[in-house]
Image 1: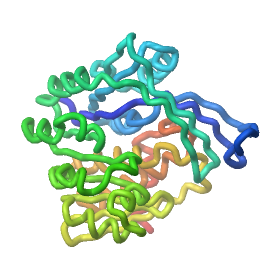
Image 2: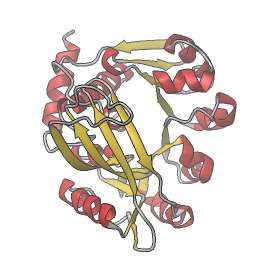
Image 3: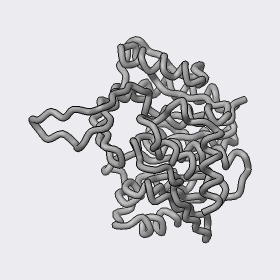
Image 4: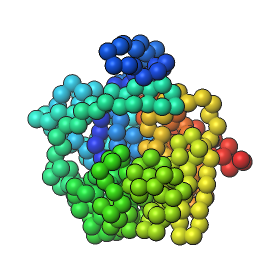
Length: 302
């Protein structure tokens, strides 16, 4: 039996860190750090695994050099690899991450996914899972909402940047999810609003539990008429914000499945997301339950 079934595309992240500024066209900018890590949707299931949740992750890795690197990387994290589809005929998503600390930019190659094989694997695993964590794009490509209902799984849905998707396109997904998560930029894009508060008001009409992540300003969580504002943990200057939203989601799901009250869940999620900015890339060996709990205790005392 699994605690969480997670979906979403995986990337081989090429991380150019400690840049002074983003490079100008036609010019070269040197960075002080360079790393290669698995990224994209992989950050959340890896974080859940490190928090002690038994997690299945359905995604496709191609049989190219980038795929081989992140396959080996994931094995070392302790993630259950049995649900991952390794297809030698396909290529792997690759993302160049340019990080200047609090801000980062991406250039991404999206490979052709194996949607049919992924959905077949999801259906195979669903009867043995308590919770499904997925993304709005996956819900638009596959009948994941219906799958969660059929197998009595609770459902969390996160967004991803896509300026072409609006509230009307995913309203039915939001209404069906137990938790809908987004960040302030995505929330404003979805709703056509200028502030996260305005977006919260609109999205909150349809969501059961709504999370709007605000980066270094923390997050806002809304459930019915209750609104909770939680600060980010004070961890000093951010090294790299890549993956902070993914690790926030992992912390939220962890607390939710533990049966905590909403304030406890939101604070633990904030602690989890805050820890992400203390290392480069979306995941690191220094991400542990003990360190997240330490930051959680700090936020509790604020």
